Length: 415
Ligand code: NIG
Ligand code: FE
Image (cartoon, rainbow, N blue to C red; front, side, top):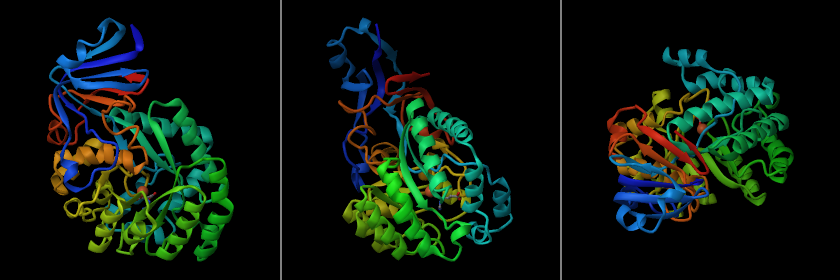
């Protein structure tokens, strides 16, 4: 038997999510399910997908690690396409202030919020950030996440931004979860640039981004485009330069107020715009037209006690919607995939099929990887989860509880 050769056979439902690009609108409803399905994986790559009876007679099972998925549903690993999982310190105190009525922005405006985590992250050693990041990745993996996007943005200076991204690079090389890195230097204005936001943007463009680009420390560049943080004009300037330097781009857009971030995402051809709680009708339609993925983060709206993003309106207007956790120490300290499903299904009127598409192939597209992950298709990485239940329909039905039984992250199996 070759340990790197695996057959998953007899799956009650083989939920392939088949496809190599983001799915828009109605396409999000078709999960391309094979009843009684089998998948064959060799050296971490999917080499065959089909009906058990048709696939099995082509293979000598004694050469494979064989997993019997009778009475279980099998799905692609989840892609958490928006997180801030490498950070120092915690903000439990701020969370309790919010429970007493303080708003997220009022805490930020009086010097707390993101810059609080910036201080702790500047002080933290690489080892501390690595060890904490590792624990968070292990937790995400237990929920069936096999690819995660991670942002910098808690340094806001050269050394700490580089430190965060290097920690992610080390984690990428040592952990079964794949990590896609994003430079988010424009996350907040640090104290040393107080009331000099334009100067800080110039500093990022001229001094920080060239280093990140040259050392290939991040694939994406992101900006917190928000009232009293970075304006549409400042965001446009930074993201245009980012494109010139070879970054793919995404935005935190229209999270707290309707500023025009979604329109900007469409104008610039961003891969995704994220949050979108207050995105305008025009912004949503422009994103659908330009193929910008709408990444919605229900746990953040829940944690901030805000109204949810208009997922139904987005899908009905032909957007490609992705769902993600937004794991971070401030607005949303959770990596719970089951909670995302619960909120998407029960509060955002997404169907289970749409939510699964949003966390698999559309999540993959939001990190620019829809050709290699996000579905069970021949040629893709063998990132696969097996549920303890016979149908994907149990995911939101077993409310906010983990339904993942076995997880295969390409080349490494974890049970
Ligand atoms: O996506 N909104 C901006 N950034 C994060 C929050 C980061 C923090 O509060 O530390 C978000 O919600
Ligand atoms: Fe975020």
